[in-house]
Image (cartoon, rainbow, N blue to C red; front, top):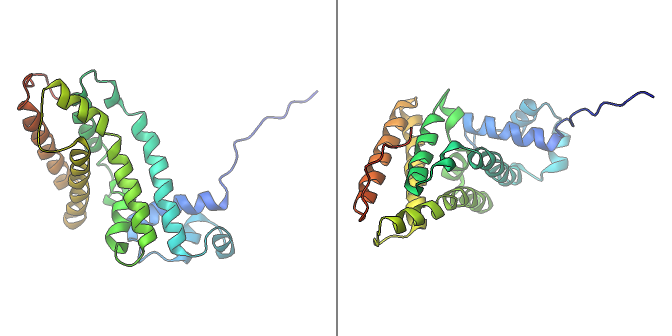
Length: 215
């Protein structure tokens, strides 16, 4: 009896379009990206596009969700989670983000950040989708920030949520600088400043901090 070998399922047209959106929009921007370009990059017909999405804005919302799912899986298995000290995990997260500053600017910048800058006033559904993406990712840092604050006896006038969002603000600003300067070096410097800021912030705690920063 012959055996049938199962083959990996090929991406359907919708997934191809979402993957194309991650690449094309980060390269050209949302407004400059056309449905025709997305279809060409995905290798699908325009009819296939409108079978899955009513318009480009609907794809933009779906692309933000796909971006969150895709990147979320990367961060969930990142090595900074292995540190025993919660502050080391927070600093390790920043170091991990710095390690991702490779290739062209479009290779490491954030889809959600790119889209929301262009659509925040004109496409509320995309703005909300980008907010869910950025804020949802920031929320993954809150538990470690809270634990680091507790371990060091910090009782500051800010919350773990606000600091997690500030970290994202620095990252998004670093991406804007990288676009303005045409390279990753300025973004890397911004993340080094962020690391120093976090170390100084938490050094005010009773336990202090004398361990080597994560690399």
